[in-house]
Length: 264
Image (tube, rainbow, N blue to C red):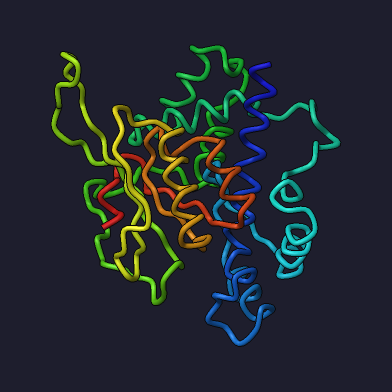
């Protein structure tokens, strides 16, 4: 059951990735002369997948994604079951997931140290060489970053209302109600271009249900945004929100982990 849920979550992430790529074409927001010109431009460089790996695509593949989405919505972008599922590889899925986890928590670990952790955790047998891990780390560009504390803080702003909404939770003071002292949370959504507050409400808890309630009211009042920019808190980084955004054609964007300030 857990394995199935994990596969479903991964499939939803892939579908959201595909939608993010084709969204400018769907909404007519590309700066290029034509839709095909946009697809040719974005496929000149490899695209980064949800798992951090990169892949090259042809313009025709993106055009196919667009056609599938227009016919079947976000569900049509979900990857199909692989015909070679269950086949053996040098690094099994569990080992790959562990590598990403280790690099996320300990970005300065080298391939030798990662290999040692994988063997110790029984993710791979000792017969798998360090070279296999080194190749994976290099191929997926997982080498340690330099100047990890540096972040690009250049300002950005969309040029029209509805192209980008930003959402966040504001922690307000405690209040006492019926003898109970409780924290108050203000969940807000703001339009990036106009700075209009399109949605907002006060709650006693910060969770996914309350944010989705605010989002529903905002969409009902102001229409569907092209993009939604949020952080990685539990209220905003969940499969249900990904599916909601996919179903209405909104590209869901997240800040980098532990970098909520990048929203500006």
